[in-house]
Image (cartoon, rainbow, N blue to C red; front, top):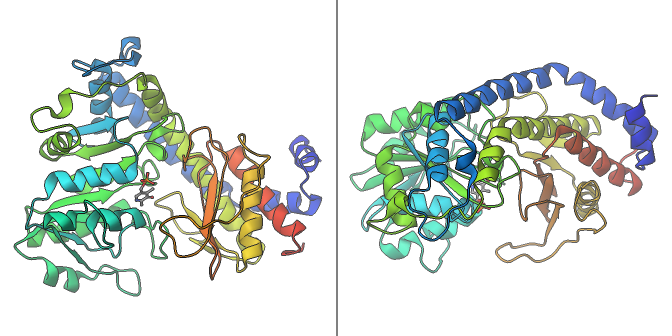
Length: 427
Ligand SMILES: *Cc1c(COP(=O)(O)O)cnc(C)c1O
């Protein structure tokens, strides 16, 4: 018996489950090599940008007040731009979360009378209130911005005919969500996003194409800005913050788009010139440096979860074989008991708050109870190991993150151990 197996046993995992987990891991060797290869490439990409921009210790100093001449902030933004193949970027602690970054990007480009189009179906929950799909105080709809949507075809392909028909002279902007989020459609590869953008720009060349890049950064070797997106947008407590950023969001893209976003975030006339970094710079730099490795760990955890739960007889989405374009893994547990047990295993594996037990609760904005497991260093960080799901048929759990592959592996094994203890699986 290997030393690590003994440790797993001491941590309360059944010997049969340890054996199965080892077999599953061995079957993924080739897959993991490919993930490492992407991570190594992206690591070099980040290093090249940091060297080109002559990062030095002085860039880590905090700034206060207006934040004029904050060289650390400005240099980091150029590094993001370089790594993402963009002209410019806005990377700020004043962007409070992913939704705020997306709202800023949308509201900065759209004017009354314009139309926003989603050619990939219904956007992420929180964006529905931003746009006004669900009525909300301050939505884009209140400012006279209309919204059009074309769903994906049943086979997951783009509805090119439908998209062509809906584009009109008011279509100013397109929003494309890369990750499936909590829907059941496939996540989009950067290549497919590029094809969609080319198609749209052929019909109307001045449409601004924005990609919601949440959970997608560093999963592939290119980002949507390298295939025609005018803007990509994401959260720093997901992939690009590398687990170290304590808050924040980013918008990267053409200089024109990013400047407009900065005027919207701060104020017309001020834009990128203001915004104190309040001491977060070192975490932002170091987090971005670690992000390719951290994302690789999260990806390995997702693939391992898929393969282990397939082996245990559950249906998983995506399956363990397909190529990945984000870090989210869904497992259909089929019962409330199963969903709760899974989340309790993830929680019990956490470095923080491992002694608490998550319970379902009625979260605002959801139509059924929701259970969430997270024991994170940064509140709500979902690049850290986390899982959640609504308590309704078919009892899907959505699992993501893991700052290290070893922690991700342990969390998934412990989730299966909880299912075993609840009598929901046998070996
Ligand atoms: C997380 C996420 C968001 C919003 O992010 P918050 O930081 O939770 O506001 C938007 N879109 C997608 C696809 C996401 O995964």
